[in-house]
Amino acid sequence: MRELLRHQLGAAIATAIDFAVMIFCVSALGSAPELGTIAGASCGAVANFLLGRRWVFRPAPDSAAFQAARYALVATGSLLLNAAGEHLLAVVLGLQYVAARILVSVVVSVGWNYPLQRSFVFRAERAP
Image 1 (spheres, helix red, strand yellow):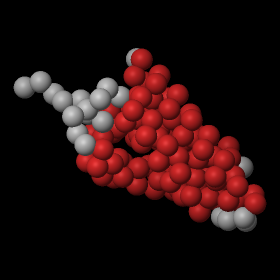
Image 2 (spheres, rainbow, N blue to C red; image 1 turned 90 degrees about the vertical axis):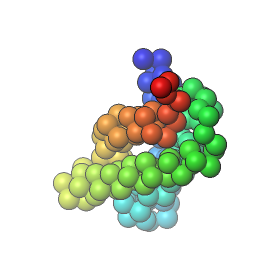
Image 3 (cartoon, rainbow, N blue to C red; image 1 turned 120 degrees about the vertical axis):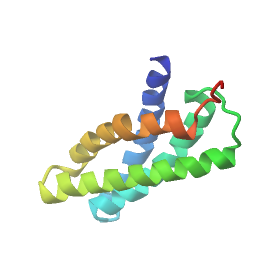
Image 4 (cartoon, rainbow, N blue to C red; image 1 turned 120 degrees about the horizontal axis):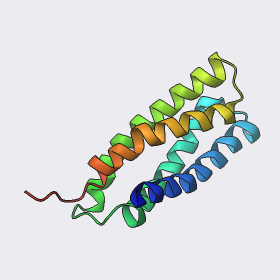
């Protein structure tokens, strides 16, 4: 449970970065919500990886490069799920884009990011 709480706190920090970039892109630069989501999610992913590697999960024997490669796979799936969810809720269904992003990010964080980061990206060495 403690690990999940650390993950959610780390995710909240990364999400704050993610949302700030997304809102800047959409509001200040006039980008489409999906493109703002991609830019924000990319910046948030970097922050989330660093927090996950150093603080959220127990140190694993893998090098940062191997973890980063696995993280990139999970983050790409996360980015696609977030962008698709943003498109569905904000563009197709007309929900305000920040509200749509909040809903989608919670579902993706708990249902995709945490399980895959725990079992695949930052997995602890298993005893035989």
